[in-house]
Length: 610
Image 1 (cartoon, rainbow, N blue to C red):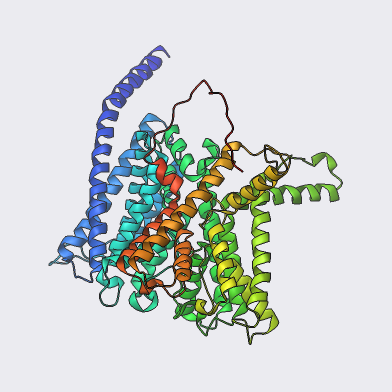
Image 2 (spheres, helix red, strand yellow):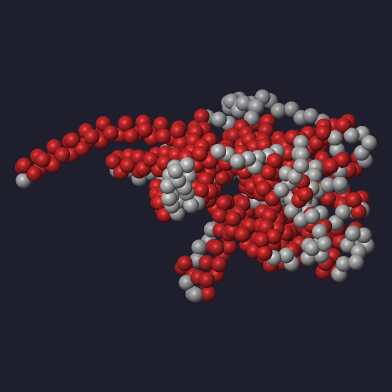
């Protein structure tokens, strides 16, 4: 026994020495391969974009080996990474996801992507049965690499506002570059046109200088759809999700930064589940929306699937883009009331905000469980959770219902003998409901906007200005801002110093922020109107105001003006769309340093207001 214990101790001692000597070496190799793999991934993606976008034949002797070499470095990198954690006896967070992905890719490479035969001219690297499958897997690896770099960059004590605004700016410029590629368009497209279309897609606005169905090819329309999806949900949501899932060494500082960008009210330990739930909920809603839209359309096959998927994503993200000729004014859908109803529901769900959807889900789940316990006679299982529905939920739902109902009634009254003429009553009601929903940042229209009565146009401007709800895919000043302003006016008239909602007192900072947003929005809209009047003085003022509000609120409705504007006016609309999407307060926060706390107060003094 003594000899056995001694031999065991010696073995463990040598094993520990081997571990201490091996780990630094393996970690160095992993860091080196990580850099090499990142460079190779960017290289192959650039070549693939060049080949697809510019319709050029890249030398396959160079392209095919590069893809395979990239994959070899990836597998070697991850194999050593797994070996390190086996030696160190540590299981990093997310190791199951990483191991599953690794095994799937390994299966695909060795079963489907292995060469069938040796080619004397190109060698074994090029004789691949599924070359583009390999390219697709390289793109996945590149996305994970970029996501990990983003999450690591968050450690550098960067302002979350800078990261948020920078991500949208990067996406806009990248989208413009992709839309400029010859494969994206039919004929010549200027840089301003590509930049305007990219900004409108990322900011989910829907304004367009050209008809995307004729100017852009199917590849270009796919690029627009991807920009809409990334812009609607937020590029940081995607990168942060993949970064937290596949990067094991993220710190609490990473989570704090991502929390400030995604949802400041969320707990630090809940941020990953929040990102996951947002992505899952988005994909589920868009999938069901596309399914129902497909069955509501007369067109079937590949074209029907494409139209259903595009309109489902565009409606949920409140984008307003359509791949139908003449948009939703197309004869195929203009009187398809089931289709218009589905689009309206997708717009409402996308514009109501993810926190509201999650809050409602938690309340509904608790309510159903309690009713089940009551019916089963198990009152001891009944759980009472006070204030399960937040004040935010009450304000958002109340203002949303008020705007939908009042908008439908007013549109029905003012346009009954005008644009709704000739439709059956249920058709008029459906169209009125659709046009009450769409101006609140969606931007779809089922008739020529120039035919509207002036009073309808003014009311639509108000709906566009108010917009959707916070933490949603929509824009505008938000329903909560409008609701808080109304409550504050009512309480001020009643002589009360604070606002109460469902036995909760709203913070003064929230009220101040609401009025700041209102003031800044009016100021920006005024500046935008004056600039466009300077660049295009011959255009009617009503059309200019409508266009500016539509751009700032990221709506996309137009009085047929956008294609007629000059380049200067187009640049003004680009800036308004971008500011309206990221928010001017967020934009200003990039340049304003956080103030230091003061532990004193000056004497108060009243100023005459009225």
